[in-house]
Image (cartoon, rainbow, N blue to C red; front, side):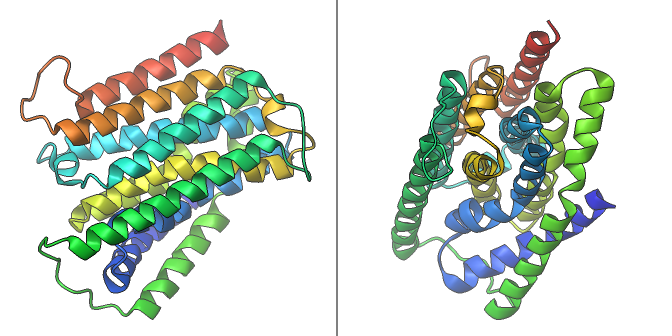
Length: 320
């Protein structure tokens, strides 16, 4: 039932976000990268805070990095759906700012995982303040750039939305609340699977839980594509990856000690896999390849292969 509720809520969420974008004139990139991304990342927030409170910090961290990998898999999949390359060819270059921010935050988090810092300030590791500061600085830059791009844009606008801004905000808030209340189910189920299967919290969090909590992003992206809102779909996926790294702050508050000091170093592998996948996503948007089977082009099919390789390498490390 939790999965069904997430699907219904994510669909309503995306439609409301598109109306908010149209009514406020902010632009789909910022709305997708911040508003929609924050809402569709609520399962990660609720699930991972619950996991930390259950003393399953590796499960939570695996979910964040695994969700970032899964989001890039979603980007590749929606681009491979007929007609091919419609999404990446239709996405604006403004999405590259959100993608770059997500790459920086994920790489920084990977460094913190490897260095395992031990200090805290006001109940938080200094590294959490770094992630939070970089995120807000990046989102401000995306907003300012998007506002300028919208002001100077001469592109043909979609027909005006029939829903009022007030109704869209209420619909968005209600859908986000459904997503938030449906999410904690995943943490307990994933912890049980990790214990019973013997695969460990790191792998189960990265693969199984990461894919599960990315369900809202999948539904939201498919809905946005059907609406023709490609920037909303792409901005949501890259924005969710950036927001995922900020969830470490909430996990740090819930943990008895510095969150990064308690994590398995194997998470750096999935974090770097997510970085590679996002870099390929940037390359695909910039390159916008016309040929279908060029060997080295940054294609969505290559992103699917790299995702599988990243999961396989992580499995080999934790199983070995």
